[in-house]
Length: 353
Image 1 (spheres, helix red, strand yellow):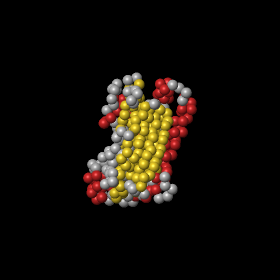
Image 2: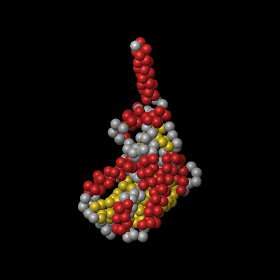
Image 3: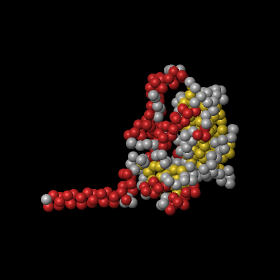
Image 4: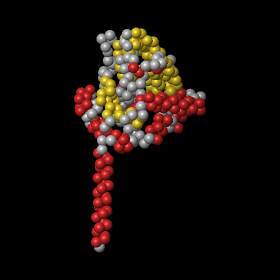
C-alpha cells in the first residue's frame, strides 16, 4: 500500500512539473517560442526580398495555370467558356489556394474572397453594384499579397512581426504585443499605445485616397480603388486599384495597378473572364525634383485581375530602395480597357486625363 501511495505521489509531482515547465515556455519572451505558437497563424520570411519574391512567384504560377486552361478551352466562345469554368469549378487562383493549404494558413486573401463571393450573390439582379460595401475594398489592394498576410494584415519578416495598417506599418519582436494590438482601433491615433507595447513605427503615410502631398505637389504614397461601368455595355464593369509606395520602407519603390473584370449574366454579377488591359505611363519626379519617365502595359484575357507593376529596379540598377520620388499632377496617365472600351485617368488625383 505504501508503495502504491508513493508511486501516485511521484506521478502527481511529475505531472505538476511538466505543467509548470510548459507554462514557463509559453510565457517566455523568446521570439522563437512565439514563432512556433504562431506558425499556422502567421507566415514567416527571412527578409523582404523573399516576401516580394514569393508574391512574384505566385503571380507566375497563376499565369501558367491559366495559360494551361486557355490552351485546352480557349477556343470556346465567351459564354461557353464561362459555362466550362462553372462546370469544372475552375479557379485561376488555384496555385495560391494550394500555397495556403500547404501551410495550413487562413489568409487575408481567402477571407476577403469568400466575403466578396457572398457580396456579389447578395447584389442580385441590380444594375448598379453597391460598391461601398464591397469586401474587396481593403487597403492591401494586391490580391496575391493578401495571401501572405493573416486576417489582421500581419506577417513575420526576419525576427520581427510586421503589422500593416491603412496609415502605415509597425513591427515588434514580441508576439504577445502583436496579439494585444489587435484589440485597438486601427487608426493613427493608436501609435502612442503601440509604442508603449514595444512596437517600432516602420513607415507612415496618409489615409486619404488622394495620398500625401508635399509643398511641391509631389505625392509619395497613394492607395485608391475605383469601379467603372463599361461605356459600351452596362452589363460589364471593371475595378481599378492603385498602390504607390515611392518611399518604400523595404526594397525598391513600387507602383502597382490592378484591374478586375466583372460581368452580369443570368441576372447575376460575377467576376468573369473578360479581355482587360492596364497601361500606365508618364513622368514622376525623382526626389520630387527631376523628371523620370515610367511605363508599363498588360493586356490579357483573364478571368479576374491583372497587375501592372513597376519597381525602382526597373529604372535604377543600384540604390533604388534608398531614393525617394513622387507622383505629380497630370504626370502619369492610367488607361484601363475592357473589350474595345477604355477609360483614362490621372494617377495623381483620378481626374480625367
